[in-house]
Image 1 (cartoon, chains in turn green, orange):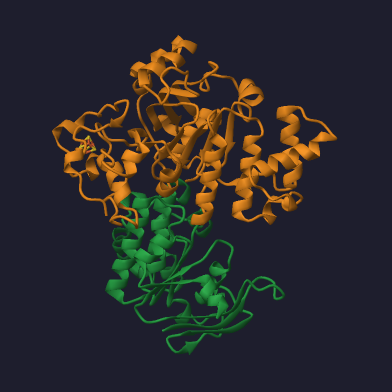
Image 2 (image 1 turned 90 degrees about the horizontal axis):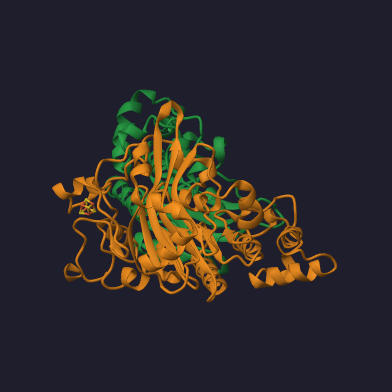
Length: 219
Length: 369
Ligand code: SF4
């Protein structure tokens, strides 16, 4: 269970963009969070993934309340999450090859030995040709880079996936391919999903249920 | 997709010099102004009696890469745009559509080579005009650009008001004290709220930044509007509003070329749709036929539409070929279930229809999901 309890968060304590929000994602469940851009849903996604410290409230991951955020989060909690953002170019270190990019979390957790096998396997999962793996971000398209970012998010086999506008920049076929890759992973691993976005048609097709930002903040 | 200035489309390899030279329509470019009016008759645009606002023939763009390799970003594009018409050029990131837009604006990087022609109604060939002509008489005045990322297009250190006023001064010669009013009128035209005029671009929401950029693009009253992914990152409602506004600005006298990967936005605004794949336009069709019945005829276009979440939501298997390593023959063959021997030669694009040896016949139409 991923529980967001009475979360208030933002970048200025006097003007939080997330106010007293409650949201629960059951194990294996996929929840779509719909809202207009700039409403604060991305901030909520960052809090849920332990990337941004809330001003108030709690994130409870499988019964354990989170105590730290970013690098202060305990590794076991940090690695419970795989996160994919809207803009792969902002999320990917331009100096790394796609292989290094995908493998980064493995190296960071002392599992470098698994790199070759895992990267090859994940490249297949996300539909990335092996010939692309040696390239750097500027040598691939947005769609290809986003596939690599998804592979990186999956590399530690997270129990929770947070996708923040993962496909907003992508064409229809690449969107369908990435969503299919996420769903295959979830079917295989039982991971839960919080997909944040503004595309109602997409999220309703993709997720078990969708909630609108207004419903969360009105409560 | 990333803009051409960052060269994402351009990063990889080859094609041959011969592409451009043997292209039959390339030689027609030499015919100059007449080609523009010929083209109107030949291609049967919306108004065959009028000279099209834009007439593109045999347009190819290649990038020379280090080590002598080439990237064929646009190959033999041909289309026209009549006054009052919106053409949506759709395709996935890296297919060459943004490079095509850059070519029309004369904004290609140094290592680009072009062939073919792109005539405005007044006879200006956008491909051969020099930078001075483009800067002084074309960009903003004859071709208005609604940019992909307005936030990046607007000058960060100046307010929206000062940018509108400067563009007005440049393009229309309005001077103080009328300038202030003219600036506000320009803002209103694009539904930009006057209360936000003294803000800086970073203080604007995505929607307002888009309107500010649209207001700038409209100032010169250019007959051709070129919108490069104008709805990227916007919410659906904002997408609808943005394209409706663009449509309204087109009116009866202008033409709009909208480059987009957003099929819903294309459906909402376009009279005709051109689908680009691996540097070529592979289908041009009436938008109502394309999005409704009988649907796309090119297998790629059909797959792209079927990938939509409101349709089958199934991806096209595989990925497009690299523009640096395009296969011989139809570039879609490796992903196409209809491919056979015939597909080893590049299928020609008819004036309306699909560049395919085995187009999907209307009779085989599957019911729309
Ligand atoms: S030409 Fe052949 S390979 Fe290409 S799209 Fe048509 S049927 Fe498929």
